[in-house]
Image 1: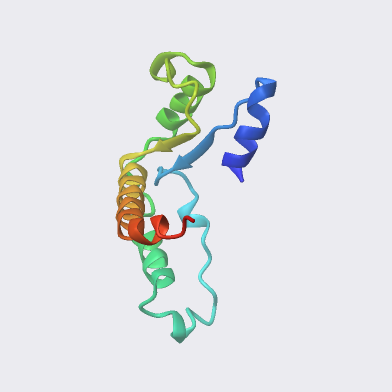
Image 2: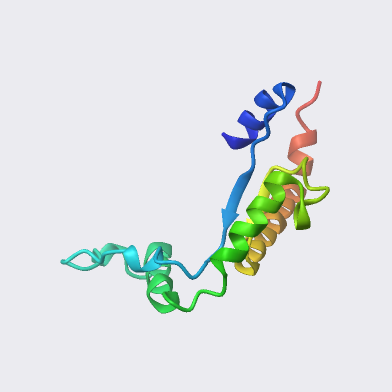
Length: 125
């Protein structure tokens, strides 16, 4: 939706920035409340279970500094500091963990695209 909105608003001089934060040392992870009954047994060993375990283990030890993240967002929004020359970019990944997830996603998409190339090109008249 952000990509579409960005294209729609661009002719009006309105910029959309999709801020994609990694883990920052805030109270976000500690705000998770485990259900009193615990995790449904069907979810044990799933990506949801892994995410919840990660929340517990990383709470208070997140690598990201929220003040630096706020400064980087301000830099990109205002086109100053580290944001100079970044005025035409949609995504703002913040944190090495976010960057790595982003890189992994791009690699996966590239691999998917390559494997589907023959099929994609087989549909023309």
